Length: 192
Image (cartoon, rainbow, N blue to C red; front, side, top):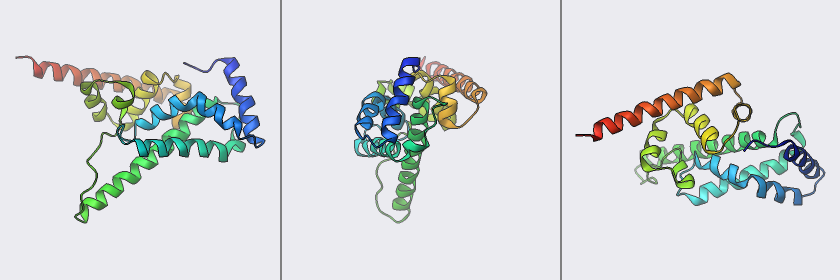
């Protein structure tokens, strides 16, 4: 699902239109990148919490509109959008955790604790796999889901997360190893 050279050219043209103030270009980007943005945002926002998910998606595309002038064509637009999405979704999840902690501390009922990854609701991942994903360190889970579920390349993930490509592959290897161990442990514990 990597951006093809012709899509990269189309993206550059659409971004040039957006920089020039053509708001219809945003609709093109929305249609093209909504599945990526929604899927990545669901990693951080409870998949059942549609309102928060929609807030993050809207915030990402508004940020695209506001920052179109800063986009440089040396990278892929897809990874730039993925980076914006991860930052916006992490911020939303952090604010939500703080709010929930404050509500609990001051005696009010907070919203029920939600899965941090929320991937299962949007991709059909089994409850067993969702449980294993939720136990991974966020850095490993981010890379694994971006690569396996959203089919981003190592370069795209590195660009989106602001890390080196070697770090992407290291985190991906560790995530796969941890998942394999967790699943084997679950299956060994389930057998009589």
